[in-house]
Amino acid sequence: MPDLAVTVVDIDDPADPRVDDFRDLNSVDRRPDLPILPGGSRGKGLVIAEGVLVAERMVASRFATHAFLGVDKRLRELGPTLTDPSLAGVPFYRASAAVMADIVGFHLNRGVLAVARRPVPLEVADVVATARTVAVLEGVNDHENIGSIFRNAAGLGVDAVIFGGACADPLYRRSVRVSMGHALLVPFAHAANWPSDLDILRGKDFRIISMTPDAEAIPLSDAVDAERVAFMVGAEGPGLSETAMRAGDVRARIPMARGTDSLNVATAAALAFYERAR
Image 1 (tube, rainbow, N blue to C red):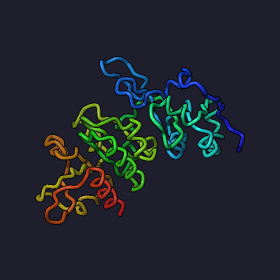
Image 2 (image 1 turned 90 degrees about the vertical axis):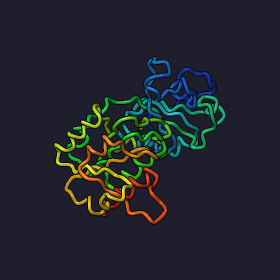
Image 3 (image 1 turned 30 degrees about the horizontal axis):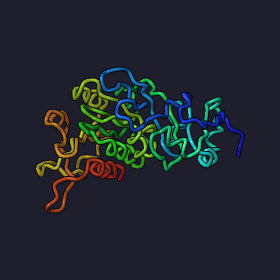
């Protein structure tokens, strides 16, 4: 194994307070990733990366990893990443699978977790400043859909993601896992004023495309040829609110075969991203 920057610390007692940042990940009221706990009290607001690949992407991201928890096999697999000078002195808590399961609250097949604190949120103006293609989400409240959208965005050349109203937390462990860590790498920002913050994009000469199954909308392929494009997608079922729809510049649809009116939001977003890349 190469010389590691991390400090390996063996953990035999699941109650060891040094691993509290990894504890009870399935708990509704004690999850360490929650910025605000049920009832309004302040939470830890941590970001959890699950698995070797996602942990590697956390190390490569703006999210500063401050601890790892994993079995010896994953320590060895992560060896090259753990030589990164930015990890100097960061603890890698090594535990058996059984001890790790007691800490986390379930058996973790992926065998390793990394944890970081949430950095200062990015602003909409910052993430779109040099972008050519962005995704804008409204009401997307499913963590797996959000994770899939980030993965699709990374693979298909989308530069940033903007969150409008009523979206789920993109830094929840499941979102990060489904995104394969790309939720940590693709820049994103939350619109403080929705949907009026779309004017920030319009001021940067983005064409804002409201995605809809409406047969009256133009085909998607006719909408993507602007220099800068923002694809706006809504929740499963209701789609974009009428307020958000009106705030766009053009309404576009994915041509569908007879008898099918719409697609899963992550799938629809992927097709829009691909059409833009193509």
